[in-house]
Length: 299
Image (cartoon, rainbow, N blue to C red; front, side):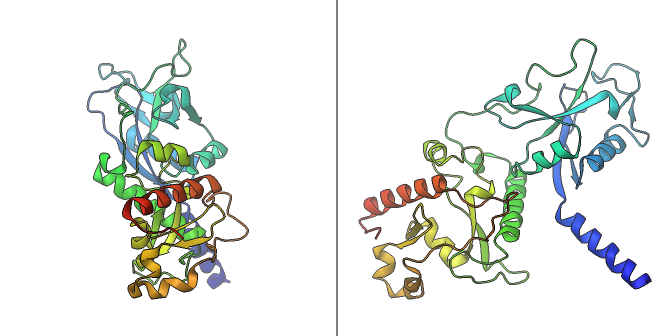
């Protein structure tokens, strides 16, 4: 009986670890000594508790009344939890985190935005202006390389984890399985984070570059060739190999896969959706365009 209970406890702990996410948190209004916190949690209850303990002291209270000048005691319950789903839309895209249902929706954003703590007042129950220190949205060319390295690394790490679980740890072309503690199978963006804003918008992944609809697991050699536009699936997920692959013995192992389809899990996981026809179709447009520029046939 004790052994069964221990096994159940271990399974529960493993399940909790699989559902954990790292959430950045800061105050909506500027405060003296303001910091950006990062908490690893599984549920909204976890987030509420750790924010109370870490940002408001062990008893959930803070001696700084939000503006940095007051001795008024405040608690985590004086605050509402908000996030902005889109930097471009700013305050118009705000959503409140208040229970497990809204937290589940938040977790599906993949490229997790910062959670802001907004102190409600009798005259303003919810925010009407952007956070004072929100990063300014840059409407010019954007890529993940513009972000801080730590954020970029965290996004790629979560991207890899989501795709590994969705694609069952195997390449969607060859079926090759990911080896333990190995990078033989990696997360690939269908439309790269460094592609033009126009291409990312046409593919429907602008500012959602790390969403699972823009990713697939690939063998490292297939990933390198995909990035070089040497092959590409069409909107029906059928694989096309360029003339460089078909004419080059270095890629002889690729040829048997010409005309075959990418293999995504069936049924699809609604929390980790597969690439849509729109994303893949535009990627094929980009592939054909690059083949023409390089003087090779897309086949």
